[in-house]
Image (cartoon, rainbow, N blue to C red):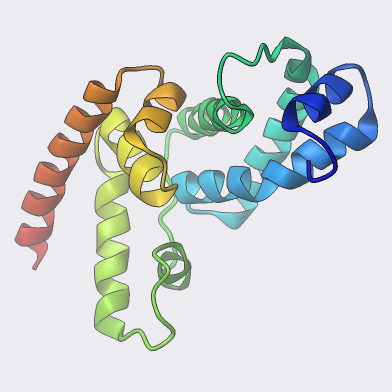
Length: 179
């Protein structure tokens, strides 16, 4: 998307321009993969989900109306694809300790105690009710604003804020019981 406006790339991709579609995918693939990895906790599953998102984008790009940012629209597709995968498997794979530290951007000099805390935190996040988990992962894991998370989740900003408030209370209670 560096060679033209985002809208131009979308229009060209919708018209069947493979190079424009490839540029859109390249520009957004890492974010899609990261979202899938945070939700699933598995590199292999994240790769499968990201590929499914690319396939869905190939057919859905013609329906992009520009009502929102392209990145929000792609997040929404990635979000629904990821949650569909997780529902289909009916289980969430826990993160390995090394992956947890990458996800929380821990410094290189992490201690075993910080790895345990990171693992317990991500396990606790994954155990939250679906909408609370989704709000936490979008806002804190993906660094989206409450408004962007609301657009992805299909709810209001106030609802996202409420889910985050409830999630913090549950996480505090669970982590206090562990520690």
